Length: 193
Image (cartoon, rainbow, N blue to C red; front, side, top):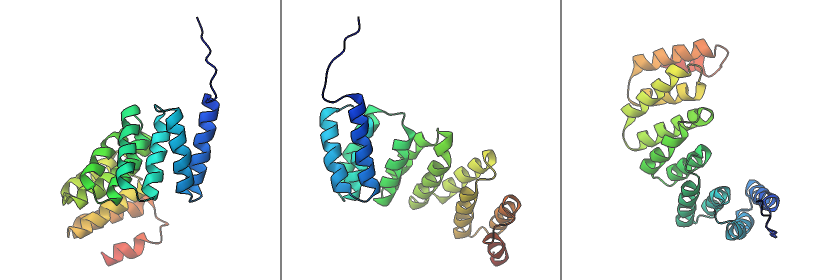
C-alpha cells in the first residue's frame, strides 16, 4: 500500500531551499545561507547535505565549534560521502588540526575523483604533524598509480626539497618534465635544483 503524505516541505522544496543556501554561500553571504540552512535542518533534520553546508556557512562566519558539530552531524548521517570528508579535512587544516584533517582524508582517498585532493591534504596534514617521511611515501605511492598527477608531483618536490633530498628532487623534476615538457616553471626549477 502506497501512502502519500501531504507536507508543505516536499523534496523538491527542500532541494530548492538547499540550492538557494548554496548560492548564498557562493556569493559570499554566509549569514543568509546559515539562516536558510537552520530552517532547512529544522524541517529535514536527517538531510546530511543541509548539515554539511551549514558547517561550511558556520566556518565562514568563524563559528568554529558549531561548524565542527555540523560536520560531525553530516558525517553521522552519511558516512560514505567523500566530498564531505574532503571539506572537513580542509576545515581542520585551516584550524591547525592536522591530525583531525588526516583522519578525514582517509575516507576521501577511497573516491578516485577526490583521491588527488585527499592525498594532497593528507600530505599537508602529515607534514604539519612532522611526519614528512610518511607524506613522501603517500605522495610517491599515488604517483605510481597516477604518474601524470602534476600537483602531487610538485608537492612531493617541495617536501623532498625541504628534507634536503636533492638527488630525489632532481629525479622527480626530470619525471615532471617528461610528463609536462611545455611547463615553463619546471625548466628553471630543474636548473635551480
